[in-house]
Length: 65
Image (cartoon, rainbow, N blue to C red; front, top):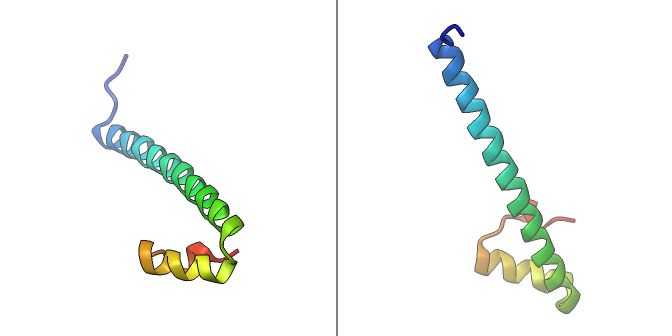
C-alpha cells in the first residue's frame, strides 16, 4: 500500500476530528434544549428566558423558539 500524501492525511484527520466535534456539539445542544423545555414547563417562557440569559449567559438566539 502506497504512503498517503502528508497533506491528504492531515486533511483527512482534520475532517474526522471536526465532524466528531460537530456531532458532540449537536448532542450537547439537543441536551440543552431538553433542559430548557423542562424549565419552561414550570416557569413562564419570558421568566425562563430572562433567568437563563442572566444565569447561564445564553444569547437570545439560543433561547428563541
